[in-house]
Structures are given as structure tokens and as C-alpha cells.
Image 1 (cartoon, rainbow, N blue to C red):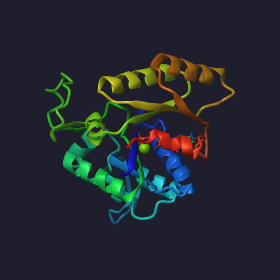
Image 2: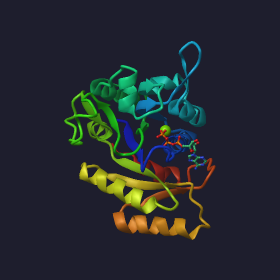
Image 3: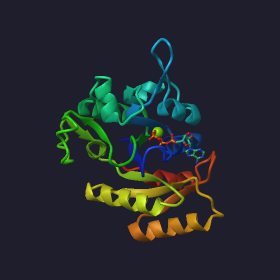
Image 4: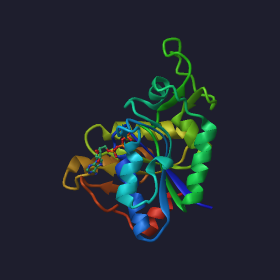
Length: 243
Ligand SMILES: Nc1ncnc2c1ncn2[C@@H]1O[C@H](COP(=O)(O)OP(=O)(O)OP(=O)(O)O)[C@@H](O)[C@H]1O
Ligand SMILES: [Mg+2]
């Protein structure tokens, strides 16, 4: 049975793709059959013939040396660079939870270790069929196709999560909120990865200390800017993956 981990973040652009690529690269360099999967991606680049030429999956496959068509590792790809639920609505292609689960299972058959990248942060609407104006209650989703949150997908996969967080000012707040929200949804947080970490910046070091103290979750790695090698030994790295 393959092993998987879900990479989420304190928000969009925190570095999920960057981190996923480095984790998979590190494992593959140790001859481990590691790969990637992402359920819903928005803001993809296309060529004139309508082929996807740029996406998170393309970046990860290039960096980590995964052969094959990157777009096959993503269930839903949208051109519009907005939240998945809005892109799905604008492009009239609503995600289906059955397809997402089936594609994840396919990724688990392809790879022994699967790094799943989330979309945005932990609170991410993937499909919202109700009209926004009449839906002000922010009701918890019922895991139905008409109303899918990212957390429904994580729960359906049964994976633990790791959180990519910034290292600078505001990091304590956004990381603690993300951990607490994930816990409230019944998830296990395996660790936090602090990105763009400057070991010479005392605030970054203190943010790490405070985040660990306030959440009880370990910061498993601190990635400097332009880091090319995931700073954790392979035998430690594989511990973030559940069964
Ligand atoms: N440690 C780093 N060093 C240099 N550049 C980085 C680092 N981490 C992230 N970046 C850059 O920051 C940008 C955002 O990172 P990334 O695409 O990984 O974020 P993301 O969380 O996957 O975003 P999205 O929510 O769109 O999927 C990218 O251009 C990426 O190359
Ligand atoms: Mg990404």
C-alpha cells in the first residue's frame, strides 16, 4: 500500500508547490518511487492549441524528474486564476468528488509515496453550487458534490497534513489559526514547514519557537530562500507520510 501526505498552507503562494517538488525530488534521489497529485488547480497556462503548458504539476514534474504528462496528476485544471470554486463556475466544469477520489487512488497505484498538494490555504471552497449572495451562513459542507470544501477532500483521502507557513511577521497568527482549524475538522497535523526562513533573523527563530509552543506541532524543516535540497534526511522525511 502506498503512503501519502497532504500539503496545505497558511494561504495561497506560501510555497506548497515549491516544498512538494523538493520533497519528491529528495525521495526520488534516494530511489524511492515518489510522486505528486493535486485535486484542483486554477491559473494554468495554455498554448495556442489549448494544451496545458504551465501548472504546479508541470513545475513539480520538472524539478523532481517525474516522467509522463503532468496534467494527468491533476483532476481539474482551470485557466482562470481565482479560487477553485469560482474558476469551476466560470468555466462551467464543476468538480466531482468521485473523480477526485478515483484519481487519488490512481496516483497511489502509480507511486509508493504520494505528496498531495492542496489549493490555497486550509479554508478553500472547491465547489459551491449555491448562489453566493444567498449563502451568507458559511454553513459546513455536507461532502456532497454541490458543496465541496478542501477539508472534505482531505477527509475523503484520510491523509494527515503538513502546513507550509511563512517565517516572517504574521506567521504565528496564520500558522496557529491553520493548525486549530485543521484540528477542529478532525485532522492530524504532522508538522509545519517554515518557508523563506532566514536563520540569521531572530524574529524567524522566535516565530518557530512560539509556533511550536502554541500548537504543540513540530516545525519539521525550515527552508531558506532559493533552497534546492529539502533540509531533512530521507529517513526522517518519510515519517511525514501515513499509511
Ligand atoms: N523557498 C523559496 N525560495 C525561492 N522561491 C520560492 C520559495 N518558496 C516559494 N517560492 C516561490 O514563490 C512563489 C509561490 O510559491 P508556490 O507556487 O510554491 O506557492 P503555492 O502555495 O503552491 O501557491 P498556490 O496556492 O498557487 O498553489 C513561486 O514563484 C515559487 O517559486
Ligand atoms: Mg501551488
